[in-house]
Image 1: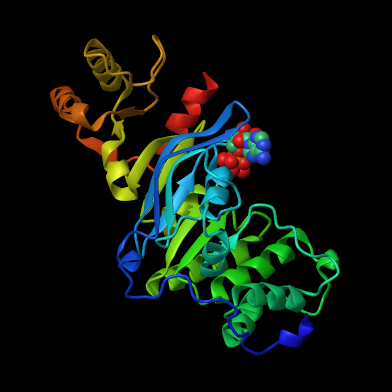
Image 2: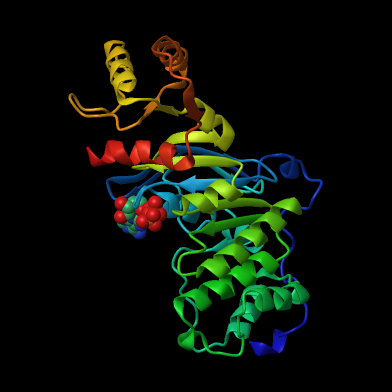
Length: 328
Ligand SMILES: Nc1ncnc2c1ncn2[C@@H]1O[C@H](COP(=O)(O)OP(=O)(O)OP(=O)(O)O)[C@@H](O)[C@H]1O
């Protein structure tokens, strides 16, 4: 296998879809009504997902929501039970090898060949793909501080992940599908990962990023899809979803004024999270639907409070809304 080390590997099969093809004009990932059953269990139950060209799209959801299953269908590793799936203009169920050759994929569980060195793994992966940017691989190995001469079995979890990161970012692909790519990375490497995603995006590459690290998604992603129990519960641009979600209102004043305001708001059905008889202790801090904000501000004005702050929901607020329903 090491015979291909350090030099470009010739393509053994024809390219999937040349650029300029009508397929190049459509969104790199288009999924409609995707159902994936394991026996009678619906792991995915009618999922729609569109990842537009050049975007970094966050794919979020609680454990067991169906993210990895959906990603495996995108790569042709699982067959869809029903629905339509197009990746780079191809049906991965019918052309799995062409899809995998043209997509940089980091699986959630990084099982590599234990007897190969990091470099030999990169050789194999590049050989399977049929195209390689060896100079970029060297640069990324340096940035991720990866010693490619060690055998995989001696690598830590983080170092195994780095081999996949180097292979994914260095490969000359237009689409990266990354399934929890930073699990096991230390904060410094996480930072380098984020830089690499931003560089990929700046170069016009499209990224689908499954992650549990909300700060990572908030920094990197333009769009998000949140999935739960195999069903999409939110999807769209992050800015729009944050706009539609509840806002957080904070009012500072003396306790007497705040207690009066809380009672007034409660009379209009707005819960300020202040239990009966509880002191506001200098601040009221509560979420409210954006549509009801004018009512809240009118009551704040009547109370005579002037120290008021309104903040958009964070991705965490958005996400926890769905988690909290789960916990009930
Ligand atoms: N090969 C399989 N056979 C049977 N059930 C499976 C299989 N793969 C996944 N599942 C089930 O499908 C559901 C979705 O799993 P999946 O791994 O896609 O979730 P996930 O969103 O990636 O979760 P996590 O965040 O924990 O990685 C789970 O209930 C899981 O147990």
